Length: 186
Length: 198
Image 1 (cartoon, each protein chain N blue to C red):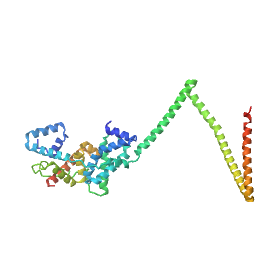
Image 2 (cartoon, rainbow over the protein chains, first blue to last red; image 1 turned 30 degrees about the vertical axis):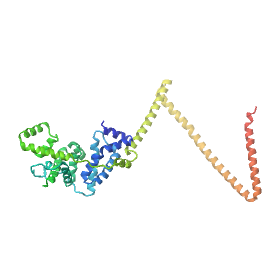
Image 3 (cartoon, chains in turn blue, brown; image 1 turned 90 degrees about the horizontal axis):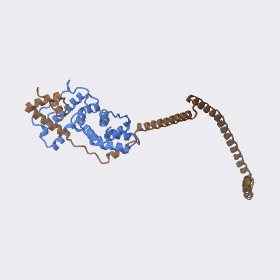
Image 4 (cartoon, rainbow over the protein chains, first blue to last red; image 1 turned 60 degrees about the vertical axis):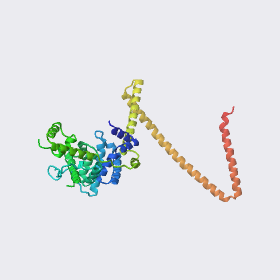
């Protein structure tokens, strides 16, 4: 049993402090994921509260065979999708090939010297944030889970209920869209 | 081997390729300066992606969430109730089995006999207790009704009597009543304490 599972067990037994420790542990990654996926920090903070409340409400249904972080981010991802549906924000279907049969790579011209090596890190980060905001939400979410949240492809597949191969392909598409934005060619 | 695509280079950098595939890519990289350069570009790009700063969390965020939480995990409350009920039932069962065992050890009679005897005892107790309880309840009900009517008639009579009397006579009557009550009280007390005298 890992730390998360111990804390969940204590919370289920009525120890509210244990759940507060869970919040302290995951508030940063969760708000980071929500803020970059939604593109709105204030909304992300509200959503993060809702996600923790939902998690607390359904804590008894958590199964220890799964990682707690995966379970928590699945709740968060569903919350985001519900929001997009309610707001009728056009979202790319992740189940369907994107732009072609092979789920092809956006055609971003390789301009030689890497954009990653052309800017100072702070400037590059700011450009990535701006570029990320222009990537379709569903691809952006996968990019954030992988490269900001640090989840493995297998964990993302579990969170999103997609095959691992599809996740790898969509994350790559998202990266290429970001690179395209950075290079001003997409 | 042809030059690996960018997706394959990314997966190589992320350690996502199988051993055989990784060796093929490495063998290719060893002889292809262009791919080595692209690999370093991808490494820098992935590094930049992963270095995005954390989003600031306002102080007191966790406390705000805790403030909105219900008192207990909803399903956990039901689970605790179920566990408590199960514990009570298990304790009752354990006590019952203990009694059975003690009876068997003390008398040497079989458990079946004990169960039959217990069943009979329960039926006897019920057959005695139920009519007795019914009669007691009936008696209490009649007593309360008669007592209430007597008290009501007494108060009504006093009201009628007081309307015929002047205040002086009424005060005198109350004093006499109080005196008689005291005498009655002490008289009863004396009667009751007669047996205590030598």
